[in-house]
Length: 501
Image 1 (cartoon, helix red, strand yellow):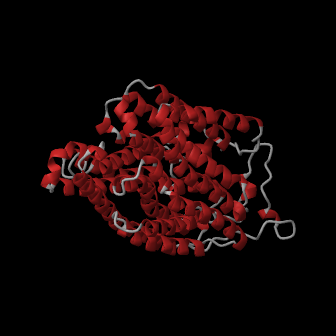
Image 2: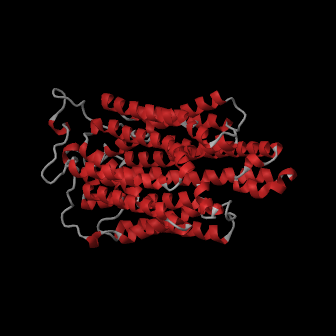
Image 3: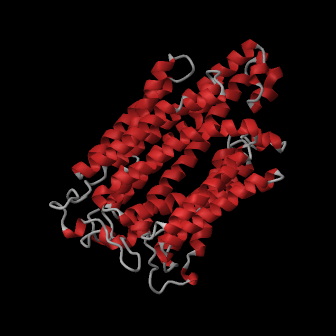
């Protein structure tokens, strides 16, 4: 981000590179989920890819910073669709018993990309940073070809009687205003503006007021609300979305700030710091895949939710000690332990929520679990970044020796050119900021664990196989209309009104 922002002479505004993407990807997830419910998965998947490519093209050719951020926002819209629709397609086409294996593979893929992204980005930046975006266009071409030529069975049945006028535009506007206002307030608060400033207070008030207004509107006005609120009458849906939201505050924050910690508190370069996230991400990959198979084998979800939540809580408590002074091997063990906890719950929440609803709510429930994870992530990144920045700057401003270097220290650029004692002070201050960030994060992980304790055991049916699988649990056969959801979801699954809550 600093390289791109510097290219446009906009280094102080570099946070908008990620914020523009995160805001639209968060806002549009429930919209794509509902669109899939109404218009089918196949068309929404193609639309997502096209929008993502348009955004990447904007970024690759942008001549000024505003157009670049617009491209990032457009790409975020496409990314929202890709995340949600792919997960919905899995839930529609894979029997419930086997779904954890595929969802776990999706999370493993995301975790791997978390490592490869910064490393490849660093390599591309050495030549031309615009290749970070051209590569998206190159890779999406074969993906579209595969979908067109080989993937014929994606469910694409439109809900009967639904027209364009049934789209819940009012709900879309309200949810967008709420999320954007709150996320910008959390991002700017304490850094760009003081928490007591009129700008931050106004954003918090607007976002806060929109929440009850949105709930009342969705309950009484639209025929097909963008988020069907009746799903929250199902205990597992509430437990899973709550667990996802609060746990993701830690998960996204660690993914974002572990490389920064090793660069600024440990003095490592960009490539090395990108690799030092491997203990965290590697165990996410291993355990999300392993637990997916264990769920398929045992037919249970609750033991994995509880074990993962407890391990993650303990690990986040241990990560409070990361302040730049621990032996690196100990830090890697703590990070690996936290990654293992995340791997246990990554796909389990989704399958647990899906197991208790009818196929009419399947897409909406899948979307809501994904959205709660993303929303928790953006809240976590904004909150944690603000904490680190505030602690770091407070320490530097209180030291007379650092005052002459404050412009460089605030920008976090050119630190290696500063005198040795100032570099050491900056590293110590950033380490203290990271430790303080983890102190603030642990309560969120604890609340997420408490949500997991309220979940009921999911009924995943019997193991698939010729001799053991009853008819209603067989792998879904796709009809001429392309609907696999009915086969994937046994007919006895009922809506929230008929589920014990």
